[in-house]
Length: 202
Image (cartoon, rainbow, N blue to C red; front, top):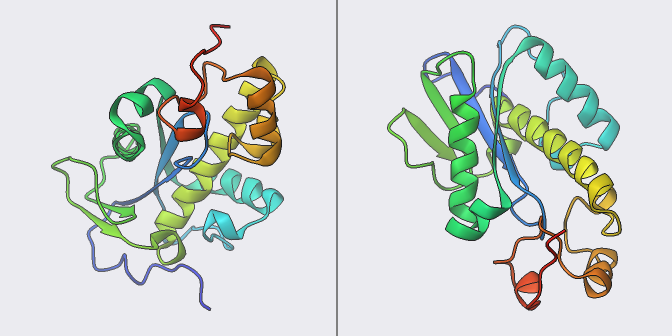
């Protein structure tokens, strides 16, 4: 099957930003979004949905994207996730990612089935990370940024294996939760964490 292309993007004005997020499903850590404005004449080859790329290829492409594209990154914290829920925290992270761009986009394409509550020209694209090169590039940057953050958090909150599981509810992570209890970076609004009545203040 063909990978992402500019086919769905060329109908829109430039500069065009693709937006995607990483980290809706994990039990711990922030949700991270990226906005990427690609130069259509200099887009790195091999860009694809981040979920289809190995770690080495993804890291390499992230570096290449940052060299030739305008990139903005936004996060929503664990506290914000628990306060407004993961959907709207994801939207907030996307808003912050676009706001962080050094160039104001004329159009924004957002992966998924809705856009943030903003007034800027935008359109959502279901499965956009597999269809649109700009969204796929954003998926790579968002994934790399969040993975890096979780590896850093792992050093400060050892035992949960975040450098490997990135905060997802793997058997090893759930076992660590049972032994250690939740950390301050666990999402208290998520069911596996909400069952715990005591939370570590460390």
